[in-house]
Length: 560
Image 1 (cartoon, rainbow, N blue to C red):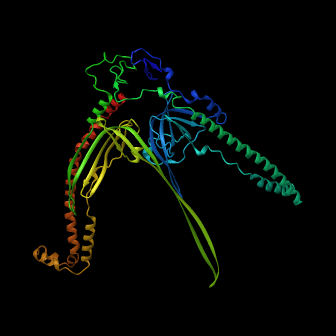
Image 2 (image 1 turned 30 degrees about the horizontal axis):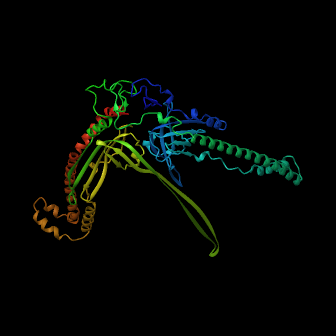
Image 3 (image 1 turned 135 degrees about the horizontal axis):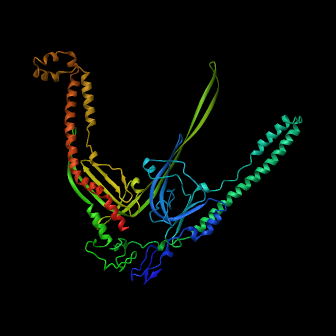
């Protein structure tokens, strides 16, 4: 729909060109049942409690579920999604994250969740962090992704029809009737009892075969109706649901309306939300520039980088010299590409035990017992790249850990602080701080403050072995000049003790350890002080973000 040759969207009330009111209620997004009601009507004939929800993904979170017993250690990946339907309600559910077409599901995708029947996931959530976010075990077995150019779908294997069952009750019916006829009715002629059993078996077989056929045909019919319903839903495009008119696409030149504080295109004369004239409403106290410039200014305010030399004192090895580079930045996620990595390995072990049997001293025979054990290990995960937009429109590609990658959505504002350590032969890249401002979540840090240098444990063990071996030898001549030099009325009684001479090497090793402990404590304090001084500007930047996070979040919300 257009007005004054300008496109109109469902959340707009005025024409941005002339300022006249416009009617946009008919442009609102629709649900699947409004567009294709026949599909659900037919499906509910076989699945009375079937329901369908369509909407836009507003949040995603990757997590795992596990199943562990004596023979299995299995993990499965899922997306926990929040879907906003046509009425603004939020639907939460888990969907499979290992399908090649649904691995890269992202915020802004339009999905249809089809629930033929209630289904829950029985495997436990793998980690405690995910248990704080995932609220229930419900899952959508049928999911359709209405992409701009094509449709993609998945259907859970739990909905596949069962194979036709084999009749087996007739065998037990035959035995039961034969026994009842022979013992209960006293039909002493075996042929008569067997005949009665055979008749019962035939009747039971025909009945069970008919029942299994009807059950199988009913399952096939339900499955065919489900496939037909999904085919009809797959025929509904993103545009049929009205998402091409849902909201105006954002542009770098967009500005904030001076009256209602809504985001609008900078080229429009009037606000499409409140209808105010943008030129007449301009005030000097309003922020200048478009939204892209304001975003860049905010990013610059909370970003910094620097590099400093660092010297790490080691007690039992050479000192380590190098540099530590710090990079703190506030950025916005603009894209996320994800791939699933699944490993499923089964190992079968066959064990054969042979026992020889003897009678007296004479070999008789052997028996063999063979057992087979299958151990299955299944692991899953995701990997990929995230593009971030930083200050001045700079776009950088970043590779995050699975924990962060599975939590980031397009449009999320994040703050990260990293330390790039190159000291001596040691190199590491540490995430000092990670905050998802949009979702109010923090990611586990790893700090340069934990760097401990070279401990020298190998040299200490060599010394311990040397002095231990020396203690158990009789060689004490190197100590005699030292003993003569320190001999006096106070020390002579001690030097005349046999145990003192015997354990003199270990006593010396103890004195060396006391020296090492004292100097180790001093070096540790000095190293910690240097690390603190080096990291202090970064920590100040982190504290600045944490103290102003509500203000930052409010500003981001204004930009939309």
